[in-house]
Image 1 (cartoon, one colour):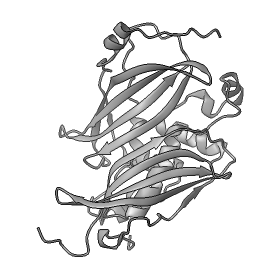
Image 2 (tube, rainbow over the protein chains, first blue to last red):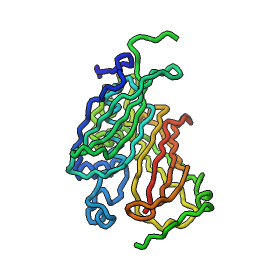
Image 3 (cartoon, each protein chain N blue to C red):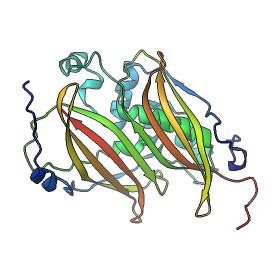
Length: 147
Length: 152
């Protein structure tokens, strides 16, 4: 729990440390159980193909969770996630790694909070951004700021 | 499957917008949080390790940001027959106001915020924007999730 990013040290344009995920069909089943989303396109290949999909696909919400992991890991235990947005533009299939990436696009203060906006996304092994999104976090300051 | 050129009328849209689900309440269990964190492979001790989480400013385990998906809120009912059985999730936009802690009781209600149709690669699609509001046992809105549901 020692790691903590401070608002003072954030620079617009800086990148968030990447989080690499290697989703498997087993993980999709675990996620189905943990989330209660038992839609068959995520574990039944025949069902998925009958729905015009090439294979079983990752739950969008699992990809959303990967992006949440990226942001909450970076912001540290004293950061507060304010907003998390994910759009499922492209499908991802188990067996293909995805990497969660992000970049700081804005650093600002609002109503006493020290905020940072990030563009975030999941990228597949071909470099396609299948899941673009954004996040806003509030970060602690090294020193209390004057009013 | 034959695809009609249009399905939604303005009257249907107006009937659908504002439709709400029944509330759904669940107790946020420690084990469910840990199981969810394991499923998404996030080893953050705030979700996994009660000893560490107790020493944090939360004083105990909290739920990962998308854990509230597991509340299993009902979908708001469509006030008409929906002929499209196949579904895709288009995305989510979450706003967070209070942490969700192990031991909380969360009540979720979903509401249709908007509904439209569009011709896509897989034919005619009905796109519904659904806002889920999650309140804790103190009546505070812990989070809202606006999700995009695609039927085709």
